[in-house]
Image (cartoon, rainbow, N blue to C red; front, side, top):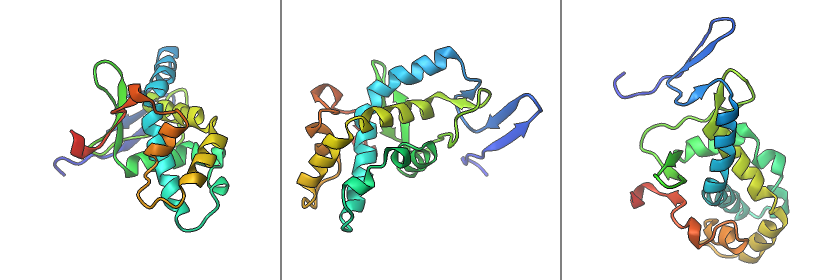
Length: 178
């Protein structure tokens, strides 16, 4: 198939190779440090994606506080599905990293605990999520205040609780903005 991405795992006993999965390899201290640094860059974008998704679910009448279970929200499997579903890629724009919608399929490792198969972008997204959810009470309060706003998409909530600031404008880049 031309232009498609296929994921193939080959296990050679001590080595696991994942074809079609960029930046997957052994866990190193450099990759872990990079992921933690990039988490700060993309926290605003991750907030907008994660909180925006939760906020849209709240319109069905759920209680806000019930939707912000950090262990569910920041679980790598859930985050990977969210990021893949929206085609959100961690991209280096020269001066910092941003989340950008990609026309091509994106990859996130759903487990990402192995020392042999490690994806630093997945760790960056998870670390950013945990950073955001430290502000859980502020986010819940802001979401309750804005619950009746049909136009809300998570951006104002993330700005209100100061996860997103003027310096993080453009941290989330939609395909229509490219």
